[in-house]
Image 1 (cartoon, rainbow, N blue to C red):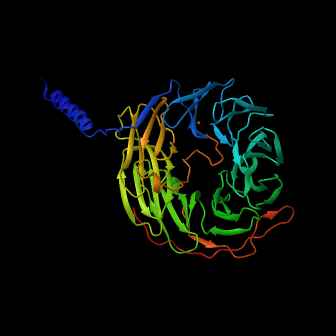
Image 2: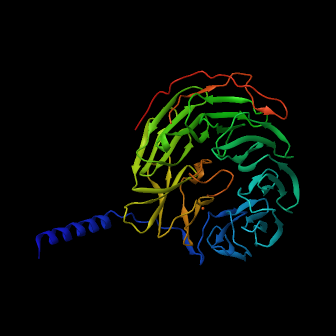
Length: 448
């Protein structure tokens, strides 16, 4: 045999052996089940059950033990994932229809027709109400139990992003020939009456709900926080070219340099730091004073106060990451040639996976049922995974890139935050506001 051929075969065999010896073994599940349909969107909590969208033709209801409770055919192809509103799970289809089904047996409760097929996914409002876009320029609040309209709000342009807090923040406008023009307006959550309009143009990014504020970015890339009810400016970031990624506790995470740099700012001015990631950012979460960052190559956990690194892991190729419980759920491939995807939950305190699932397709964000994590793959494989850290889990926040806070699915450099001086505000109903300058500062502390 030719020496070169023999050497090539030896190298290939060595790589195969190395891959086999280092392959991760999945964690034994408490139970497992198989759904005979492809699951194209994340499962939805439905009372004490979980609702799954099976392919493009049905909804299935499973209990926390993986047993099929009910299934219901849907007449038209869905457009957005299922959402829970009070006693119902709601589905919006591509032919401008909205239907609500009961959370216990999937019986049809009500059905409403929209004027046009919406670009904006429905959002949940307080008091078991549903916010839907009846046209591109109009929003309606519907009663979750009956589908009856509660109020209507109209805009001078298409509504493209919605965020619900003490009021409803709406980004609306139009795409100009040269550049888009977007405005931010808040409307009353109970009546739909306009409360204020921010005087500057903003980017098309869903505002973050942070305490009693909305955090967003103006057209120059400067993050700004305003009061949800009055529109008064609370603080600005003295820098441009940012994307707001997360706000939690005293900390604001900002993306810069195309998603490879993270700046963490203390909103009260205690300390700020930044880091450059080895690859593009995927997602993050802030839990218990710790920041977990997932990039395309791995995972790391740092002190939110100063950026000191607690632990980091090289995972291979990270595809998705979901904030969940007290950490992140990560979909990744250990090796580039792997045909199977790994799905693991990493607790911020542990630095190692609590459990790992393996499947040939992608995984959706789990649903928590007490100490059991209800895990679903796109192929319809369902796993009940034991979570020993469930009792200390917090409410993880943050969104995968491309997944907006309003529920819609599309299937830089700067300086730290400084408090805004009194007098700056958005424009209330018919009065204009002013802006105040900010005090410059410089972030301290970094890690790589």
